[in-house]
View 1 (cartoon, rainbow, N blue to C red):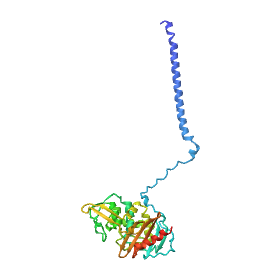
View 2: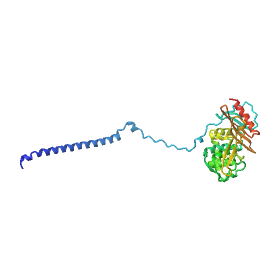
View 3: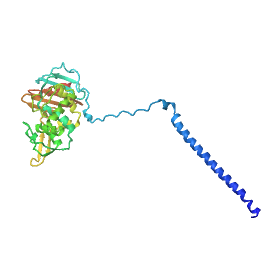
View 4: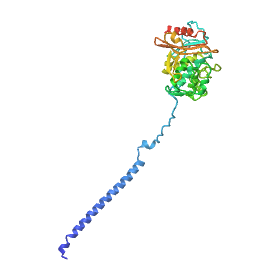
Amino acid sequence: MPLDVLTPVAPRRRRRRYRTGRVLLVLLVVLAAAGAGLWFGRHEATTSRHPSLLLQPKPKPPPAQKASHRHPTEQPPARLLYGSPLLAGHHVHVRAPAAILVDADTGRVLWAERPHQRRKIASLTKIMTATLALREVPWQSRITVARSVTRVPLVREGLRSGEHVKAWKLFYALLLFSGNDDANQLAIASAGSVRAFLRQMNDEARRLGLRDTHYTSPSGIRDRGNYSTPWDLAALTRYAFRNPRFGRLVRTKEIHVRWAAPTNSKIYVNNNFLLHLYTGANGVKTGYTHESGWCLVASATKHGRRLIAVVLDSPNMYADARRILNLGFSRR
């Protein structure tokens, strides 16, 4: 083969080898740098952290808080009544052996006569029944009347076993007509049984600081072991007024409600005639048994002030209530 044909080939091959070698060298340098960077990054991550991070222990997660299932209204309230009678030196003729007058807005005791004397309270018991039931029983819920409530003695509106009644109707019957069957039915709807509801009533009395109060029935039909004092009843009523629905119920003078056939309709008239006799009267509840005598928790509002009066075992409870309310409103 002629020499002039072979001579140009050798330089081209040398150039190709040179280029290939350069590429390989560059690849080796890149791989080496990448490996060094990886090692250096790990080394920095494990040994070259900021001193403050190395010296401080890992923060502990905050302790898990236990969820509370208690209703906000179940939190123990502040002292409901306080102070010695502000108007103690003012004479007022009251025939009730035990009575009290308090400022409903502040809890200040204005006047008192044996305020801590334990006495039978009859249907004033229903103030506590309403307070608890309003918390537990939805206003518009439908309640099936239990057979046992139809056998409650004395005053009852005549609920029929198995009939379906809206809860709000039972509340009006409880506080206006003072039905004992309504009290037992709301107790069952609230706690599942009368016995369980009685436990709740007495637990609530202790929680509210009513040290001289005890309940043996939701209605007050049983006098034995069922008692309270003017002080405790005024404190309970002041607490009950924190629920606006309670206030609307006890100031209602009369209400007409529809009822299922064959009754069709009922009229509940408030037994508290002070609503008609005293200007500004807006509650609360009457009570009577042979042992308790005539009892009344009354409230009235004048000049932007609401007062609560309690008279127990009074021969004339309305006259007594008027006298001590007048005393309170005459002193600003």
